[in-house]
Image 1: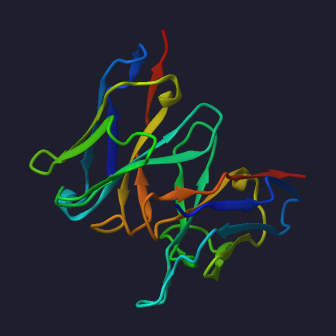
Image 2: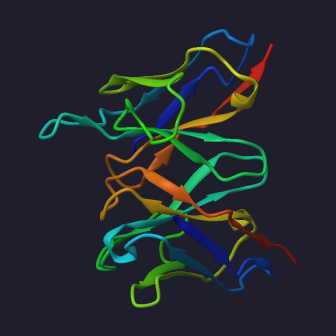
Length: 121
Length: 113
């Protein structure tokens, strides 16, 4: 059974940093691209970033480019999203999601339960 | 960036009746070399993460009831629930994965009339 478990969310002041993690199990982790998708309270889904199965390629939404860094450790089946220079508009539930293939050109077939990030003073 | 739009914003349908949601992309998401539309549909219930229903515009994900179907090509797509059940009350999103940034539609809320 595929499982994705996010952690690391919390309350952080504007300008601060936070590191989210996602642990995957139940599938061959290194074979699949992974994404982060966020959802602000009461709003729709916003894609944040994708990383290829081997970790060699990443892409980011313009809204986070230069502030967020997405990485993976295939030896530990874990993902990390380093978020710097956080803004109020980054407040959201952050989901990690498994791609149905090794690149960004696939749908997202499994999602974690999400972790809430609140940026506020 | 490919902009995704959905219509209607919300709809209310009687139990057992058909629900139809439309999705339009600002440019084609059909990749000519493999004739695949890079379009997916997701269902999200309150307090839950999204769930993949349909990918490649018309392929039903394993375990998804066959009352859900997807159609369309190029820039215009439709999700149809052939006979609405109470458990189908949710938000529905379309998504293109043809190019980054990956983009989602704004969502359509489906309720019981």
